[in-house]
Amino acid sequence: MNLIAKGDETNIWSRHFLDSLIGWSSALFLIPNPFPLNPAVLDIGTGAGFPGLPIKIVWPEIKLTLVDSVRKKILFLKHLLEVLKLNDVNVICARAESLAKDAKHRNRYDFVLSRAVGSLEELVKLSFPLLKGSGKLTAWRGAGAPLSAESRVTRCESRSYGLPGEPRDRKIIILSKGDSFHGS
Image (cartoon, rainbow, N blue to C red; front, side, top):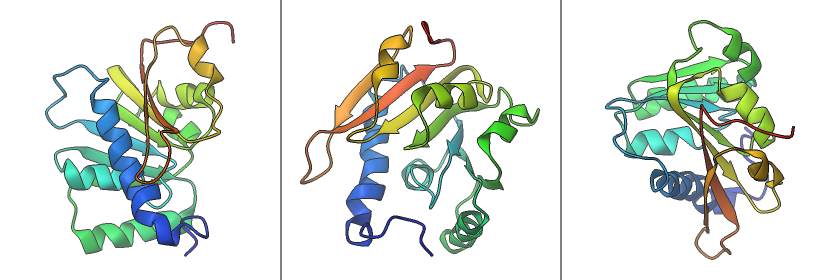
């Protein structure tokens, strides 16, 4: 169905499942406890369900919303959810920009996840209206992704990690809703 890049089929476990889970577990070291009991989590630009679905499988208490603007991907996710019989997962076919304007989604989420979607500045603009006051944006970044925006964030937590057999060239970035960019 062309949900992941050609050539990724042989590396789906490391490039997608492990990246989602290792990135999230790296993020957990940066997020102060306690976590909300049943956190509301939004995965922007989820594609084939990464990173949201692997996280949901290992942390079933989350209330997950998967968002993508491509109908084919949303149909796949709905089918996958029926097969996996996961509870508390909502799938929405929409652009994040329109979701941020929808009163049902504003100030609702404890975490917004984003893996390889847009620049950090774009993610802040898209996700901060969706986050609760204490909410966190968790952004996955890969090798070669521009990270210069980190230096323009008032407070930014980040952690590097690697995948099995690959260098430590991945990064997870955590921003709190109260954080802001300066000089932009």
